[in-house]
Length: 436
Picture 1 (cartoon, rainbow, N blue to C red):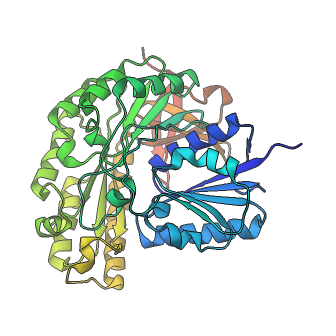
Picture 2: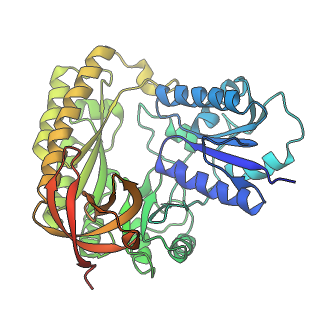
Picture 3: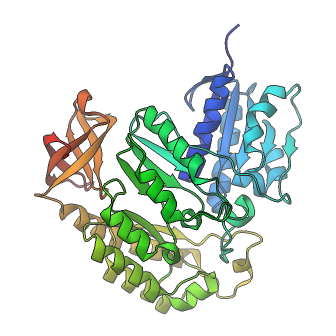
């Protein structure tokens, strides 16, 4: 008898990728064979996102595509969209199981116990209290792992459904996370990205502190690099900045959500800082780590955002000159306070503002990468091979390309950075192994 085949289809954030990888390992331990997303499968697992209406639509289209391609396959859907709109998903042809984020850890058992198909089975969604912590980390990538350290959020920003979809802020103990980091190291991966919904809010469950987690992970043997996937500006403390500046393992790479450079809009959004406070945090990072990569999230077209408010955002970002901008048009989510706000922004206006910030990002990212030309840096090379070249990242997240050498994959090399191409990749000349 042939083993059953399972495919995983992950939408959204790094957190979802870490959870999908953990679910896949459970299926493999149960005798299933994991196949590629495009392959024919007996079970298709969709780990959904619901950060925008576009994310919901993408999930629905994916489910229909999977059913057309594998009409006999069991389709199980979990994740944030499944949490918020379970019965909407259950009505899509081909769906057999809908599981909440609380029940994500039960997915394998539910699939294994499924005895009949036809009407989708929905497990504890919508109104349940989300309290369980599903421990997760990714595997399979030879170089980098995503390690979930925190889940949920207590902030309740006016535009966001994540606190409904993920529940309150919670975490597992530092000791358990350290053990997972050791497992990642034992598998040969060199870099860990710390992920969570509100990563810097770590400790709500256990009374521990995020800085204590960083210090404990810094001592794990076999892991050479850590990155913090995202941290709120009000949680990026001087203590964390100083620690990252002094640590050899924690990279000079920060992803800090701004959302708006207008204090009036930040107030409407229910964010917990001002534009001035945000700028002060970026400047604190720069004083300690002048070479730091700083990525910033921005939402444009929020209700009430006029040309003056958008101008404030643009001017702040131009002055701060981050290495990258992640720009999103505002997406109205049912049930959030933002739905009731006056001053709706026309989609065409939001689209224009997105384009303006993306053009700014192109210039800023190009300038940041070009500034590395002529310097030397340590690069962790990955397995991707394209046009005879391999690629890797410096500690501060400049992408580097060099002639492919299989022996260099998953190694950290000292590289002299050369000319930048149109994609902002830097040519790399390997000059030796990493510095001791």
